[in-house]
Image (cartoon, rainbow, N blue to C red; front, side, top):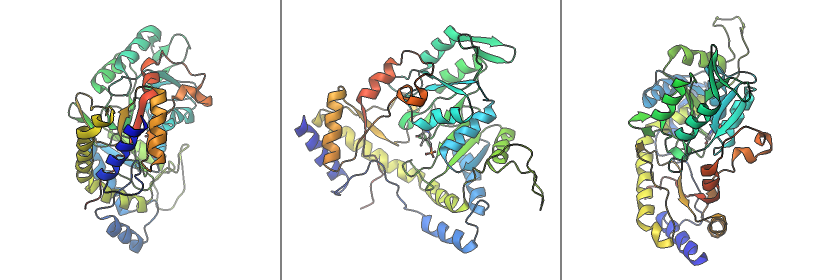
Length: 384
Ligand SMILES: *Cc1c(COP(=O)(O)O)cnc(C)c1O
């Protein structure tokens, strides 16, 4: 086993030009990053107001084919505010998946609501429309003021599918099911910037889409995020809430509800503007890497996770599917020992102490993937 994995590490190093350590996902600054940052510093507008914030919001709406984009401080804040504006409040339930990064569930809890976990699909690794439909058929009931969970008595206020590693959930089915039950959809598109499903971009399906520009994502602002919506009024409301809910006035400080300081600083906006310009170039480079993996990976007895049907993938984070826990652990140890960074998929949310008591379905697929999926180095390669 070890010999196969050792040989794989040699192959990865050769694909990445024989660096000593190969990271899982590194940012690349190939464009106007330095230039825009210098301009920002010279302008003195480094903080929460500035030309790059406006430029980014306008360009990002175009990029995601939505009507309004709002730059925020990180992806978690984007999710939190999206849920609140979708109508999630105290003691409500939000349906999501247990196989996700912790921020998805935390954003629900920050709104004093309860996550409910439905299973994922084995191919997309995102929310399974079948699991969602089955759960609602069994437990949901439509009342005058919305959809309720008959067994808990709580309102089901939103559904939040997450597009794992940039693979898209089957959004046509998910939105159809949610619309039948009058449940708003908030997409956790943090990992899926630039992916699309049946030609429609990630983030543009739901009432809101949320993105992250953390350092490990496909493009980065250092730290940052965005909320997008096709409903301009809701989008403007998101801007208002994330900028302290201040009623516009030239000098008065008057805030008419509980807002947040979730603004993206102009310095970070400068970086993300430059990164967005290079998106296609980055994606192409990552696509070439994926093709190189595809050519050779079977030689090492490894199975590359295949791009699901109907997804135009952003190639964010590539993964292999191991036979089971023993093989997975051996692979993780060998690769990390040899300087090839690999990471297992997340532990399921319902195993974490704060989410152990949440309602959930069988989770057979999530548990299957949890034991087997490992991410492999996926950075865009440096131009030689
Ligand atoms: C990265 C990520 C987030 C949160 O983004 P931050 O910018 O780190 O707050 C949320 N959900 C998922 C699925 C993510 O991968």
